[in-house]
Every structure is written in C-alpha cells, then in structure tokens.
Image (cartoon, rainbow, N blue to C red; front, side):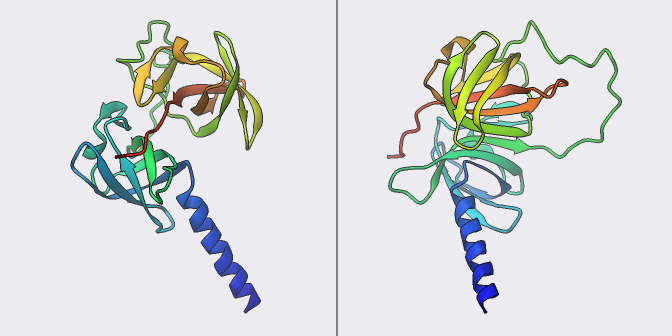
Length: 209
C-alpha cells in the first residue's frame, strides 16, 4: 500500500509539473477559430492541457508564420508558454507545428550551408534545434550571449548569422536584444559541441481581458 501511495503521489506531481512546464509537446485536440481564444493538446502520456492565445502568439507551420487559430486537430505541436496571474490556463507565447520527418537524404557539399551571410530573418527559414534554455541576459557581444539560468547556471551561447530574434511574437533585429532581458532560447550544438542559438524569444505577456 505504501508503494502504491508513493507511485500515485509521483504520478500526480509529474502531471502538475507538466501543466506548469514552459515547453510542452502534444497533439492538438481542438482550437478556437478566432484571433483570441483557447486550444487544447494531448501529451504523449495522455495528459490534456489547455492554453490561451491571442494576436501576439507567434505560430508557425513549415517554418512560415500563421495565425494561432489555424492550427488543426491532429497536428503535433511544441508550445512555449507563460503563467497568467490568477488563471489555471497558461498563455501560449509560441506554437510550432512539428512536421513528420522525411527520410534523410545524403548531404552534398553544395547543400551544406551552416551560415548564410545574406540571411534575412523576415524572409528565410530558421532551424528549431533540440535544446531549450530560459534565463536573464547578463553579458552580450556581437557573436555571443551570456545568460543566467536557474537549471544550468551561467551559459555562453553563440549567436549565428541566421539566429532569429522574436519580441512579443514579432521578428526583430539582433540589436533589440539587451542585457537584463529575460529570454527563452531554442538552440543546438555545432560541430565543436558549442551551444548555438537558433531562436531568441522575449517580451511582456499581458493577461487576456
């Protein structure tokens, strides 16, 4: 009986932590077809979570910006969210529709372009990466951002020529990133095993009226 109690407690704590997680993946169950509303997802362990969205929510499918209300039931998504004061439902800051992976093709020298000096963040696509960090910027240079995180301590993250910067869901310039900002970083590792940023996201989230 004691073991069963511990198991049930652990399951409840896991479900609660998932509800409070800033980054969650799941499958869309339903979504309001209006600029501001709610959507629900089912996670891999069958947890059903609800989120609020509005016109400031940044949503993308196939690396193109869409309205958040256009995500469709059955699509797998990755949601970055914030707490809303006085509400049990979190606010969806970004919604990324995850496309089914295509079979890998051989990478030729002509297709390998890790950096693009002519990159236009408002027109070109962006890599999503498999690492995520949140923290406060305490040092910034032309090619690196230093952030203080609660989980991983102080991190030095490389800024690529094609790093995308988002403020309140809108693509902005690298110069808009400043020290003391609280940011969310979607990143990966380069061939030298250094962390490099693909997306840097920040902004103030307002509670829905």
